[in-house]
Length: 141
Image (cartoon, rainbow, N blue to C red; front, top):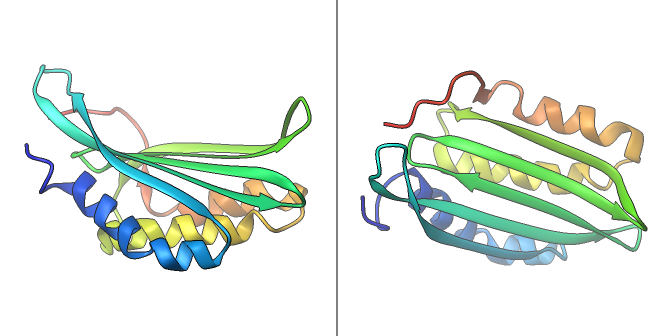
């Protein structure tokens, strides 16, 4: 696989297209395609995206990784002195028909959700991803 095709590259381009909009949310974004190897030893690429913003004077970090088989890993956490105010992690095969654009839209929803009271954030983030990620065994083709 080359870096110019596949789901990871599409996700990377979708984040790049939203860079200015994310910056308007006072979010710093870094997204890149990184080389990886699947279980069969085949060279692949995956997308690694990290978004950071400030909420209540502290850093919120959102990380998204995407693989060619549409597997996505999403992690978000809000730092406090000595730990995390809240943390959220999910993963699964991204099955939304909207593809990479929908994935980026959901990440943007997470950024807005991070502004909510801490006791509501994790449940709200679970609701964002509930119908678009299928969990279970991960098969890498």
